[in-house]
Length: 357
Image (cartoon, rainbow, N blue to C red):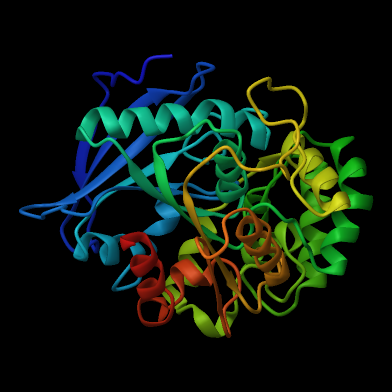
């Protein structure tokens, strides 16, 4: 499909983003699903380091990289001379909901996104920072040889190996098939806006079993994606403005995704659905990419255990010894690696340094 932009393209400057100007570029995935790309610049800014693509996780959106903190990851990349592009892939809450799998995003979204960036910039290659299910799906795309122009992939939280805390593994194995009988999606936004009797019932159960927080979306996020209190961050790592902001930043993920992740968790690594011809049938075979991979994990991650990123590093290192890298961040969990109040000091320097290489 074409990556040509439409007349709906628009620019804006959002308050509190240190003068960042954002251009929204509509485009299509290779199967025709409408997506958007956010190109973030600053007036007079130079970009000698070239383009970098930021890929969000499931049931959030590209703006997850711009929380209400003084210095975001986007700021850090712009300050260092990167040309920043943030994709809203098919899991984004800013797009029309569709049933999707990781294979769909890998085969159709990222090749189209990469072509768009290269066409707009004239660059021949780019780098990527990918988070959570944006990471798993992007890694599938890279392993399958579908994004050969990407030279560096910095992956946060999870990539090839899907190792969950015991309670999370039990939830996805035992509960997800039952949940699928009642709803096509599972959504943290039910914490503040329910959608029928099942969502009201589930919200009531979750709120009663997560007394650690009075933000019902925070509780629903923990139930949906994690096993901690809370599950995707440590309260000590995020400020009040960010904790309030998350209320509007989470929505649903389809049960088609949970079905693929359920099988992947069962075997301990990503498993393709077998429904998309361009996806490698064995994701544990030698990867069809020359990209350098950097595996990041919060040591206290209660969504995906840090052990998974260690295993993924060891797997890739076995094919190309000494080429790849691995970092764990003590005291950090899942998303606070990106929007922690002191992430500018603790995690961003590592991310930026690895993308420079």
